[in-house]
Image 1: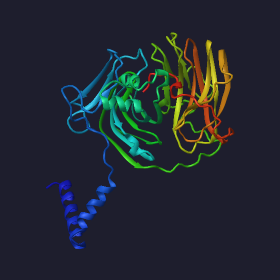
Image 2: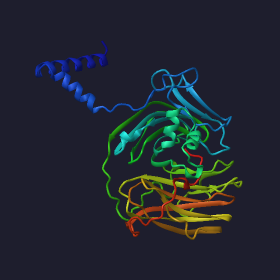
Image 3: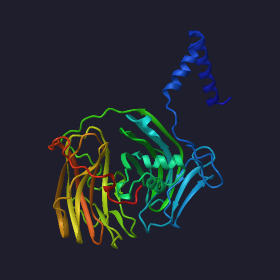
Image 4: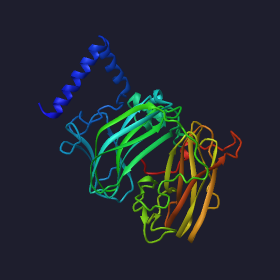
Length: 412
């Protein structure tokens, strides 16, 4: 017997004798207690082992129609078991997020708890970003579509909702990026609070940009919610606010327009070596926005006044404007700050700030730096997002917007 086998055998014997010494029910009680402490995996086919001829069961894929993208059920490169899920993207013409995803319907049973996702990830020749994520939605239309076996569009029409009145609302969001050019199997983890009125969870394992990524042995568990602690006033809550490190802490909102990009730029900066550049070499076919943003899944920012500030530089942004904005979602719907005196034209580094009263019952806050996507270049640097005190607006007086007012993007 080898050393590992002997150690396991010795442990089992010790457990048995301890149980016998304590009485006939002790061993059963110990095993039951350990089982009770272990959270069950909420995902179906979490190791991508089961499936048909070409794809694992219980997982679906986004559809972009790009010939450069391949979703692959890989029998050769896996972390455990017989297969792993993979995505290969050989092009970067259109900025689109591609992912394997799984829906968890009727998710009201998780409200008031945290859900934690852990996935083993791997990368090769990656010049984009791989990611794992969990989203919490209030989306009755998708549930009806799933229950009836019809498309979401068909369900929306049957329920009498126009496109502009679609009641879908994203209440919680957490994504973890990885951008190592080459990476052996590494676990990635995200955890998010499930807000009230959530009825759908979405788990995604994906890729943005060129390269190949693998995913295996995913685990999603429901856990007691971590306590919500107050934010210190005046502290910059942004990670990597000066863009001096890889930008995995930042989310992008980008129109699916050829050449549109959000990138680090070492040719100009307000301070340090880098700034972030938002650019669209061709005008999008519709009015839309580009943002570099960070997402805060918080309960204790409700009823607070927050400020977003930073430095902006523009080149030939003539028929549009650049701005900072704060965007919030909660059980009330969607709310956000107005752009105010937005910037335009050609400008050297210029300071800009905006403030916003976060409504009560808010669960997600987005801090965004961007511009209304069109021709030209927009740089941002040295950004700051902070809590500055209690909300100034009286409760219930904040103007609410419909859930469909969120700027269009190619996410997730």
